[in-house]
Image (tube, rainbow, N blue to C red; front, side):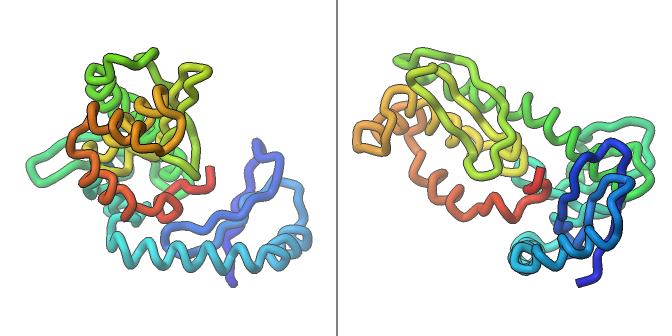
Amino acid sequence: MPYRLVRSRARRRLSLVMTPQGELEARAPMRLSVERIEAFIRASADWIERAKAQADAARAAFGQTLLLEDGGFVLFRGAKARLCWGKSTRAVLNFPEGREIWLKARDGLQAEKELHALLKREARSVIDRAYAKMAVRAKRLPVKFWKLSSSRSRWGSASAARATVNLSWRLVFIDDALIEYVAAHELAHLVEGNHSQAFWKEVEAILPDWKRRHQALRAVRMELLPFYDD
């Protein structure tokens, strides 16, 4: 399929990215030859086909919420936030008609980088509020802190042995109620390591309406969200 070549002096290896619009990007070091790039693309045909199908499914599922362009939308805390380029600052702003995400960038590649960094920054405070709310209810549990992760396969993880909870920054895309559920789920794992009946009792002690939130989260597919490849 056609592709867009993006070169960078800082890049050390070639990678392929399927944009939310279903367009293929080859991100390459400055000196890598076009012949090697296109050979890599041909060898990645199966991955490209799957990634294209996922991008198409994402647009069908979320409509205009995954257009990473000026005036487009991205999911933020479970709702659409409009992207606005060329602003004097980088921030998430709340207006009566909805949220806007302001970026300084004036081109697509820079806007993507800024948005990625901004969402990860916002994720820390959004997730921290949800986690703190759940941790207060988890009085039996040994730790009250958490670490931000870049996991692209799990919303969260926990280790009772290390007394740690890890939560993916990608939680910033989904509703606060679902973030709270993930936090409660991982806090319960600090007491019960498996998904036994005792574990679900721990979850319920922290979050009595966990079943409704659990079902809602199951409908969200992580791989259909932006920045799945970082």
